[in-house]
Structure formats: structure tokens, C-alpha cells
Length: 258
Image (cartoon, rainbow, N blue to C red; front, side):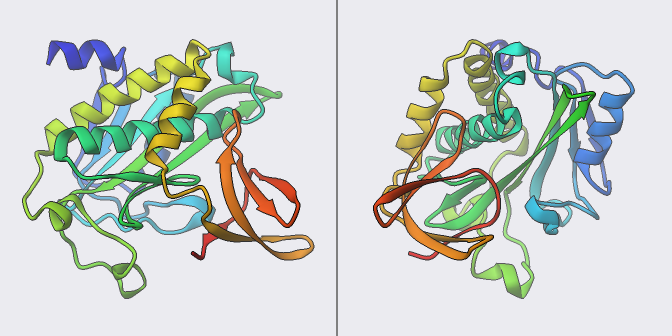
């Protein structure tokens, strides 16, 4: 455990463990606004108003998953980047996938921009929310949900979601999983702060093996655009080949269609 603690680099040193809350991201944001330092972590047994990207509901039943938010106050190494929250999302995806692989042996992969999947079924999602004041980054709340145990998913999720227990046929130790994710996140956050973007991008490319050549589409002001995903750039944007052009997707809803 000492090795795990050293790798975590202060993340999770202060943990608020809640039986139930609306959203761990909201709790962490209030703590950050009150002066809580980097690495403070909020963990809930369940969420009644958990959310994902674009305001979607994150299904958070009691005892079925890990619902976690961490306060990050990144140094200037990434706070001056085009989209520091996007870079942190990228690093967190790598960290969570690496931790799942290390603890369970599952071939977890990354689906841009913020999903960890097994066989293209969603295992975990990440939501980073930045607080900016007078043009300056104050803090980022990094939230993630990881499906640990089999649950009765709503019909719209049942074909697209999975859990560690469903994939392995056995339960996973929650404390061990959280410790390994925290340690892995500490490793990748250290890479970010030291400007070692290539290390993160290289790991992302290895874990997101299905991305090159995947057919994607997204809505744009000129209508639905379709193309073949090729890579990501150093800022975390998805690079998509559309005809003879390489387009850079930085936001919006990307649909993976083949």
C-alpha cells in the first residue's frame, strides 16, 4: 500500500465517503470553492443525480459501482493549454483503463473522448468540469463512474453497458480497485504536470487500438459529417479523415458507427 500511496502523489489523501448524494462532482465543486486543496476526493455508494457529458444521466444504483470525484488544481504546465480539462480527461481514461487491466486482467479499451469499454460495451465514463474566473483556471473536478457489479440497467443502457463482475464472472474488491485507479491517476497526472504528453498519447494509442479506421459521425453546422477516425493530437482532439481532408473534432457528440 505504501507503493500505491507514493504513486497517488497526494490524490485521495482526504476522502469524503458518502452513502448517497446527488452528484459527487457537485459536492467536490462546493468543497473546491470553499478552499479544499488538490486531491480531495468524494466517493459515494450511490448518486441520485449523477450525470455524464451533455447532461445525460449517469445510472448510479447503490452498491453497483464506484462514483468518484477528485479536485485538481493543475499547475501552469497544463492550465495554459487549449483545453486543460480535455487533457485531464485523456489522462484519466488511460489511468482507469490501466487500473482495470492491472486489477482484473480485462482488456479494457478507450473510446474517445471519455469512455472506458470492454468489447465496446461501456464500463466507465469520465466527466471533467472546469471552474474559470476572470479567464483563469481555478480548479477542475474530475469525476468518473465505474460499473463494478451486475445491475438492472435501464432498457436504453442494457445493450451498451457492462460491469467488471459481468465480464469476469466474479466480484471485484472495491477498495483495491479505487486504490489502483488513484495510483494510476497519480502517475498520469504527474506526466501531465511534467509536460510528458507523449507518454500519455502513446499509452492512449496502445489502449485505444480500435480507434484507427473506425467510422464515426457527428453533427456540425453544415449537417451530419462522417469520416474515419485516425488518431488524436497532443491537445486531445480526435482527428478524422473526411474525404481528402483531416478534420479536428474537439467537442460535440461523436457517434461510433462501425
